Length: 320
Length: 320
Image (cartoon, rainbow over all chains, first blue to last red; front, side, top):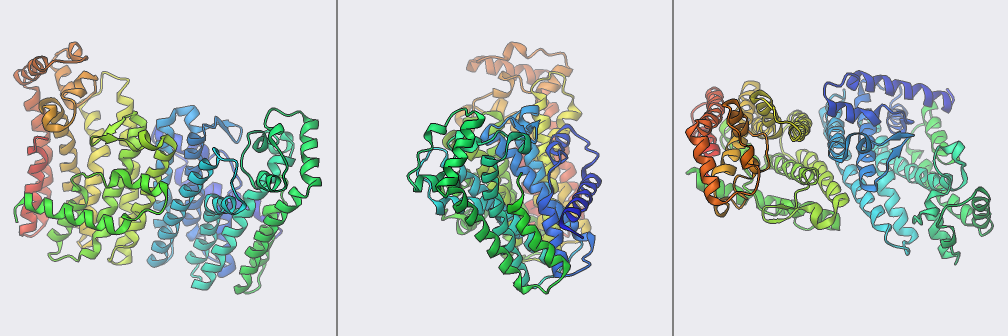
């Protein structure tokens, strides 16, 4: 099966199972918790979970999938709380949960999803010890994600964030949950410690690369293509790796910290391209992908391992 | 050991263990998460956890205590998020977390504690199956607590809340976590299903009674004694059981919905006393205590069972 077909089929499986668990909300708060969860998304974390399980033990039972859903539900909870913290009014083209229900219910909706994530692990058909290790992996991941969000917020008041600080933030805020997804997949499929550890490294590396690619996409993808405002990070003066590498080269991006016309964005892209900033950032993402793929050497060759390698490259080859 | 001595000694044990786990925060966010956790409190939930364990299996190992801490940490997370939702600036005489660090860090501090709670269960020395059942009990309890807080907030815009609605809200918002505390204690000590279920009923009943007693204390305890503003619930028009029962009797409390002098509060207390409102509310709390104590009949007689019975009565006999 090629990657595209696999991603589409798997996303449908995830949606069906989410629907089976949460499709009939009984309370208003449950509906608020469901709202973003059922608003689409690529379902990459549960897909990575299942693919990792398959790569470790081909023909893994779909009964381990609840733990995979736990990762999507966790992701969704962090988005709802992040949107409150960042005062974002829209996500995926729809009003955010707190915009629709108010901040108090937004906080609670995230808190409900948080609990659901741990409850889902309990529903997983895998030995009890694996479940407990999964609970521990997920809880430690959540703490790291919070630390990553706190770092990200602290960057807003600074213009001297270093490459190392940025990479540490991205590793926590985005990498860790992908690491938990791949690691938990291996764990629930009965993988060995070295397989679990290798897949955690794989997941966290490609997850961090994913975020770096997102920063590039923010710059180069037109809003028709991405559904977001083009170059919003630079217009808002965000400390992304692009901004950090530009600063290292003595480039002053402050003139671009305002509303930009299409040709001004083109000029900005040309500048960053000419100075090697985009290539440099791109290389950082590629390095992370290489690290991730290299860690897969402990797995036997299989079509699922090939899909994992393809998925890693997809994480930075996608253009939106 | 008498109850007072037991409560004091146990609270010290809880504080020591919390200190061992979290006494050396490495990040600012960790400090924010610790702030309310180390600001005192009676530690009633972990105490109830341990006492329930002892009542089921005398001499239970202190190594099950991490799961007991999980309940205190969960309680603390709900307080931090509630304070944000309710825009409360002070708790336990200190500025609330979001007052000190801002709302975004307040949300994250609660989220960190949330994860810590589940991680603590993983550290508990009890069979893996019991740990997973504890994770499930705690996660379901958290969802109920969120539903209870949502109900409580929805009451703010109403003046027609019924007794049944109030009791359902209190059962979720306060009862459930005490139920989880006692139930998880029995579970981690190797109790039978009927013991676990009995202790859950005991905990949730006395927990709900605790909240009702809190409402009475709000009315009758002077601020010197309670550390809170006297009669604040009635002054703010809150739908407590006192207000609901007064309304049922045709009493109009709206003239008391303002700043009140000491003699006006006395007049209000006299009115509610004369009309039998206080006695009626008191009886509701006593009924819940009776239900709780009755459910203990499945336990063999023991000094620990006696302490559980004493604790139940303490929940509504305390005057602040």
